[in-house]
Length: 254
Image (tube, rainbow, N blue to C red):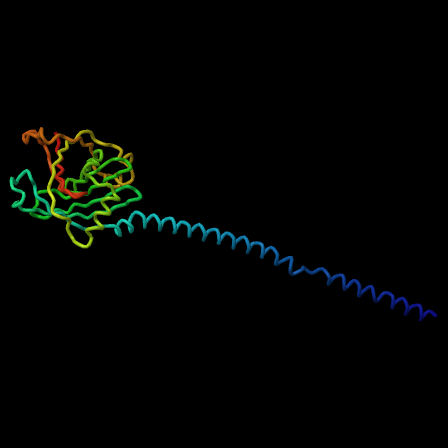
């Protein structure tokens, strides 16, 4: 009897050891508990990358549109043309008068109401090379004398300068030929007045033309009064056109 009860006691203690060994093996980390934080960080990183790429693409689109607007588009809308003209003041018989030639590079921005012109002067001409901006929205004209590197601003003369749409249609109509029909020369005289300190107030196009250069206001002078040569300190002229007629703009310091 003693032997039987001893064996039964052993048989009852054996399972406890197995239970204890099983309880030591159970505590293992669930693989999903380790993967979940990694997946969460991956989603956040992907969203950040997508947002960054979207911002970069929008910047490229906006920047590209700006460059196209103010550089590529301007070059694409450029016209190179010329005007043959005679000066009625110098010739009593216009039919036998000799004609001279003005050549210009013209760019028209209809949406902005702006005309940009580069006057090309031949070596035999006594005019000065210049860049001209007509801003119809602001009602201003700016002349940049490329020889003196100085800028001059005056209210736009709409009686001489054709608006962008009309000038554009004129240039389109004569695009098949190189030069405009023969025309005549009209004169205008201007005198320098005050200096302009802040060109940023003149609008984007004129401020871009005149920034970093001495800039002055101009005042028109009646041609009949004339300008006494002995009073002229510095004087130059620009022969240009922005319509069917040629214009000689004389700019002088008092």
